Amino acid sequence: MSTELHRYDITQESDFLQPRDFNRKTLLQHVDQVFRAQITNIIDLTSEEKLFHVRLVKDHQRERFTFLPGQFVMLEVPGYGEIPISISSAPTNKGYLELCIRKVGRVTSVLHKARRGALVGIRGPFGTSFPMEKMRDHSVLLIAGGLGLAPLRAPIFHVTENRTNYDQVHIIYGTRTPDQLLFDYQYEQWRRINGVNLSIIVEQPDEAWTGEVGLITKLIDDLDFDPANTYAIVCGPPVMFKFVCNQLSTKGVPMHRMFVSLERRMHCGMGKCCRCNIGSTYTCVDGPVFDYWSVMNLKEAI
Ligand SMILES: Cc1cc2nc3c(=O)[nH]c(=O)nc-3n(C[C@H](O)[C@H](O)[C@H](O)COP(=O)(O)OP(=O)(O)OC[C@H]3O[C@@H](n4cnc5c(N)ncnc54)[C@H](O)[C@@H]3O)c2cc1C
Ligand code: FES
Figure 1 (cartoon, rainbow, N blue to C red):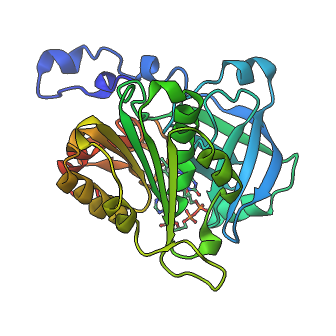
Figure 2 (figure 1 turned 135 degrees about the horizontal axis):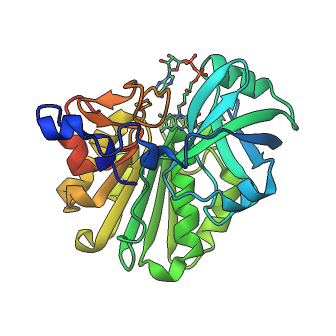
Figure 3 (figure 1 turned 90 degrees about the vertical axis):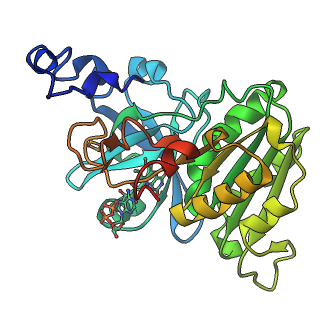
């Protein structure tokens, strides 16, 4: 999505007097609409996270709704509010969206009490996406910490469904404890795909845990890959970006080939309300996906 349209240089008289698209109608025409949607299934993933299947009610809206890996929707719970949530399903899945939601506050707590059949609103999709086309023919590192597996799941689906377009694929996932691991029912499925490696690590194992123990950076240390031929997607808490991206950088992966998804509080999702900006950068339209080089140049981004 072009971000040029909403920037006017008010110091230039001609620009100020003749804005090209002052209400950003061109930019917003696809996203300034609330779709009625229904929660068709709810899956308990952990004590804090649930996976919601959300289906747009109107057939033509459902069929027309497309998104790219890394994009998000604004999910409205009528009477309570609207929140940004990453789309966690495969872009090829046309029937419903999968949204993995952690219970943290007002709106998410109401959602965690919702039953199948509940009606919600969906706006979007919003934001930038992971550049999967650029990554073609390269190896891809898909790295997530904690809830970061939710936004990472769409690029994982993309890469595994288009397996022949990519070289080696490494999925690396870490959480604090084993009971915080998300989507554990999919791990075997991913491991069985030729050329896909899945490594999992926890910081605090329980008695039943037989896997790796430590921080995610330990798995990256052990990883055998060619940095000159590799792209990386990193999703998780901001503190993780610094450690993981700096480690990848030390190993030789250029910063412009690492992509992260930044989270900020959002209200409109459309570059209108100034809730999400970092300086003059709007996380909702210029992001949430940024390459790490840009993030390093954004003051206080992480
Ligand atoms: C682009 C994007 C994608 C997201 N994807 C997901 C997702 O896939 N799954 C998911 O569970 N959550 C996701 N989030 C975070 C989610 O939007 C917030 O957890 C949600 O808005 C909280 O709403 P609430 O009313 O329940 O909490 P509130 O009552 O508003 O707040 C509860 C607590 O959460 C903090 N908080 C709220 N919003 C954010 C935020 N955006 N970033 C950091 N802290 C916040 C508040 O400061 C407060 O401490 C995403 C956020 C963004 C910006
Ligand atoms: S959320 Fe309103 S400007 Fe980004």
